[in-house]
Image: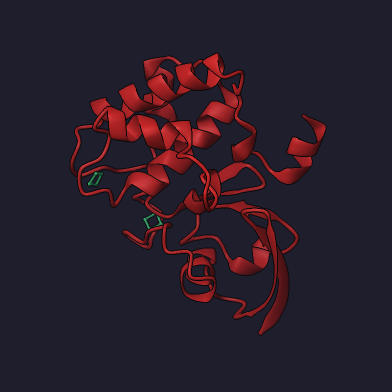
Length: 174
Ligand code: FES
Ligand code: FES
């Protein structure tokens, strides 16, 4: 077992982890953050997407030990306890961007990373940004509409490049 110190959604955790354990396993089974989903387990579906230092990664392929000293943001971190839904979450609901919902946490986290980089994406840029996330239900169009709607909302609120999706050290500079 190997000691790691990981910040997850702003909370510091000191953990002993198997050097071969995935970040997904540690988040779900170690920290009981079940919002992040396991789909394929092999890097194809994007259901397990989380942010590590602001970058979207497939948590099923990311070793937990590699998250040592890093900031991880999961879907739970976009709307912490008691907070209102993140504009992306609200937009997915309003635009019918989900049906079964299994892909949704990964989609929203990927979209948050996209909007942090590009607050005014085109529909094409949204499709490109979410290319690593598979949805079996929606046909994708409502998801694209949801992300564009959330981007507009974030800009209207003056939250373009929403800080919630950024690592702490970038938030500190913002
Ligand atoms: Fe990680 Fe599918 S579960 S990419
Ligand atoms: Fe079912 Fe996307 S809403 S897989």
